[in-house]
View 1: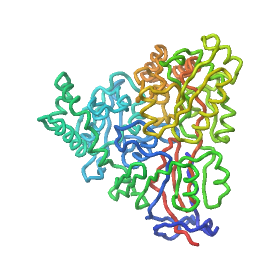
View 2 (view 1 turned 120 degrees about the horizontal axis):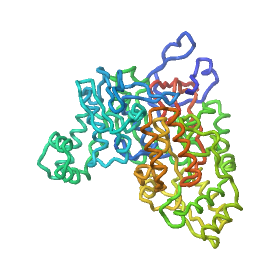
View 3 (view 1 turned 180 degrees about the vertical axis):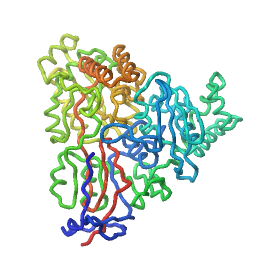
View 4 (view 1 turned 90 degrees about the vertical axis):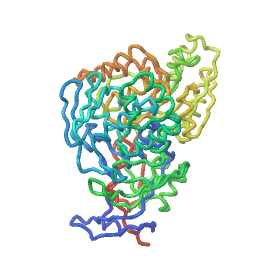
Length: 559
């Protein structure tokens, strides 16, 4: 795992420009590094959060905010392996039964205890049809959760699922205060005019049946309202305020079970315009920015007041998806023709300025099942024309590509618009605000779209299942609306296979089919797209695109 540089006393002699900071400076340690605490840290992002609820929208901007508020039983280390967080120990009892010992020294932000009941309540809430979470699939393999004692839970899965610890590290596995969960359900129940308590609703849910279905349908429109306004987890920061479209502010949680954060507050600031974010960093209005136009890297690298990272790849991808259920795109020959018109190397250099690496399939080099021998569809306009003729579209057709306001995505959309003219495709480009965009492509309103997919658990199942299993069409992640019986079968086998070598072969087969079917054109594995001011120390950015601010420090600056 790569880390941002730590600013030493010697580096402070460079005469950096002043930056407003309330940091308290302590004496340098024996290595010459200053250990500081305090200060109001400002991090600027291109997109706002759509939800602060772990059961909310499945998007990276929201995950990045929620990551400081909530924790799960596990985290993912630099080797894509699960490491215990709120779990103190665990054992796989048999193929479908796991036992987890939980930490007994953890408090929620509201002062209540983290325990087995809180874990059970949080996970069961994610899969509750009343909540209608787009992330319910994350834990669809879980059949039951049994509380054995205050700090021991038994998790029984419907089928063998070797990657369960990885999945419990997913943002959806962030544990919410049971007191807040109860309040949220009771609020929804009361608003629906039902004469029952939250506990009585839980009893109905455990029994299932028609009465539960009626209750779930009745309260569904109001679930999540309380948690959205009062997100309470066990993370190192606790919620302070949110101004939609502008910022989310969190503050240090002093009763955190590990060493508390160094900074006093962290503001996730929304600065949609890329050059404005860079200006924020250069002038010291922001200490850290996430999302940088690749054309601006030299500007940042050559600035002595800025620290950047090189050669760090996120476990994520950027891709052009195609609605395989809509019109001409239902024909794989048309999809292949479009893929043959995409010059990935040219896009990498011309749009991304070499920041990242091209992808042949859906899996990154760091992930189990990556196939270095996979053969991609090459850039070949003549073959593209042949395929269009074979599909019956030699006279052309009109399509629409949707994107949000990320500059590189807009550039790719415009580039495709030009390139596809050569094979008779008139491509309309429609740019939408992030929330509106997600809703539109989740509803299938698009022909083509451009999006990224972060593999939040480092396992191939998470890199492929949400994007391509037919059960995940729409908001679950499969916005290509791809439905392939063989892929479904392989993905189902892959998540049940415990032998890692056999799993790898299964996922290689899936990637080969995806190259043939082309529901999506995978362009790039993203490189690190963030930078910080030099007075920022100890910032761990990792490979999962969710920076860890727990140990970050701010150095006092002089004119």
